[in-house]
Image 1 (cartoon, rainbow, N blue to C red):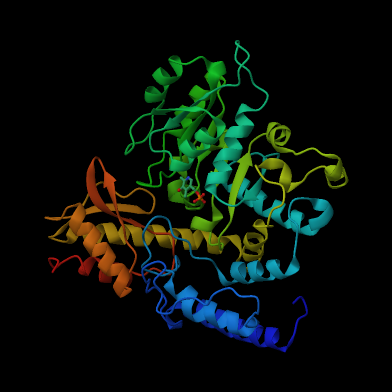
Image 2: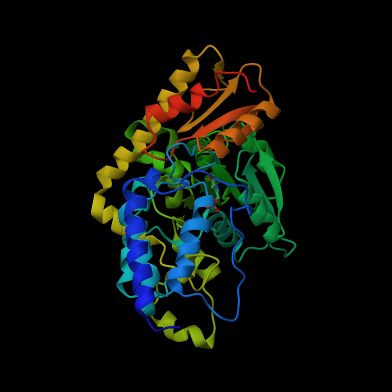
Length: 450
Ligand SMILES: *Cc1c(COP(=O)(O)O)cnc(C)c1O
């Protein structure tokens, strides 16, 4: 089954044609953005059996019955959660990377792939304002990046009683993955500030006062809260953390990309003082899944925390600086390579333009909502997140509308909660989302539901 035979070539040709169609005009691909109910595709999938059906037939199932049921996150009206719209250069490199069977954990095996990933990490560090010696690794997602940062923050520390520090102080707006990381680490989470607001040092100080600094693993601040787009007051938080000698982790998984926009940069002032930063290129920097980065201002402690040691790893570790050393992983996909290739192909200016395009579209949506007699902003937009209400509607109506929009292929928009109130949420991370897309969605909210 490892031989590349005629039917593999046929499948490859068809995959190439399908990929070209998908990348040039996503809406031309059948059933694009028409999600079925999960697990209820038109046809039941064939059973896995002792005899195979061949690559071309298996690909036909994937193409016709499996992939079309997914609501693609690069659909221009996928505005739920945080989507992702990869560039062709990134997608194509990602596809070739699979064929190349690169073990991305060490330089011994991955060679110049590691150098290219380092260059992509360097670009992220530079625009986030980190010093030249900052470093990290690409991981599967923001969740693993946050866990890796917190494990590094705790490494080698003990309280006076001899226990590892056990408290993670987090912005109340922090992503769910911070709680998940705390649970894995056996740590207690103490929130500071409010879920919908920006964390200020004045809210954080009393929380830190209430804990022995030796018992605090880290403070986690948000730079672009997932729900609201809010950026915590990073400069004053960084100053307070420095004064208390507490590790500051800034989660910029979604929002960090906005620092490419000169007029949004200021809101992030102080992020460069964080001990570690999470940023997800698979959200707003246009790579395919999965590509997130964990970055450390001083990578040494991270390396001490994460480097795995064993006799069978010694050969790989001779070449001292390995991507495996900076996160909770060993074998890894060289996830930074698609980002590097796309940066090389498109130039960094194109990234600035693409991010600004998303911010502009978010601004347009906010304006249209303000002008509408039936719609109302729940709060001023922050970064590219727009929260709004439909007058007369509550949670049930939002849910009904959202499901109808998904089933009809109009778009994927999901409700959330803001200040204890159900609202609709739009998050713009796709530069191909146009004003017309926004108008189509907002127009469908005009009429009362059947
Ligand atoms: C999406 C997100 C995460 C989690 O990232 P995954 O890649 O989904 O694991 C963490 N933090 C923030 C702020 C996010 O928006």
